[in-house]
Amino acid sequence: MKLTHSFVAPAPAEEVWEALIDPERVAPCLPGATLTSVDGKTFSGEVKVKLGPVQLLYRGSGEFVEIDPVLRRAVMKAAGKDTRGNGTASAVVTFQVGDSVEVETELSVTGRPAQLGRGLISEVSGKLVDQFAECLASTLGSVDPDEVAQQQHLRVVPDEPIDLIDTAGVPVLKRVLPIAAAVLAVVLFVVLRRRRQR
Image (cartoon, rainbow, N blue to C red; front, side):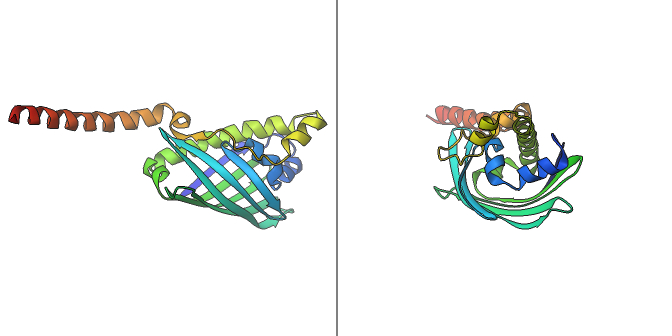
C-alpha cells in the first residue's frame, strides 16, 4: 500500500536533511524502535509492536539506496519479520526536504497487523509521523551538546512498543465495537440455542 505524509521542516532544510540521513540521530524519535547497528548506508534494528494483548517484535535491516544531497532527496529500503513468525513488514521510503518534509512510503505488511486494514494503518502511520516530527523538532532545537550526543548513541535496550490500538484511538473503537457486538450476538445465540436443546 502507498502512504503519503508531510510535515513542516522544524529547522533549516540542510539541518533537517543531515539528521534524516543519520540513523543514529533519528532512531530515538521512532516509536518502538531500537537501532542495533550502523555500517555506512546500512543499519539493523528492532521494532516492538503491540496489538491488543499481542506483542510482536520485528527484527530486520535497512539501507539507503539513493541519497541526493543537491535535491535533499533519499530513498530507503527496509524489511523485517516477527521473531515468532507472526508476520513480515517491508517498506520503500522516499523523502525530500524543503520547507516541508515530504514522505512517500510503499508498505507491505503480512500477519496480524495486516488485519487492521489499509484505512486504519493509514491513520496510525499518520499519527506516528506526527509524533516523529514533534520529537525531531525537539531534538534539532536542543542547545545542550551533551543532550544531543546522548540522543545519538545506539540504543541497545528495546524501546516501549508501538501500541497500534492506543495510537489509533477513537477511530479504531468505532470500527471494532460493531464487530465485537456482532460476535457477541452470535455467541449469545449459540449459548441460548444449546440451552433450549437440553
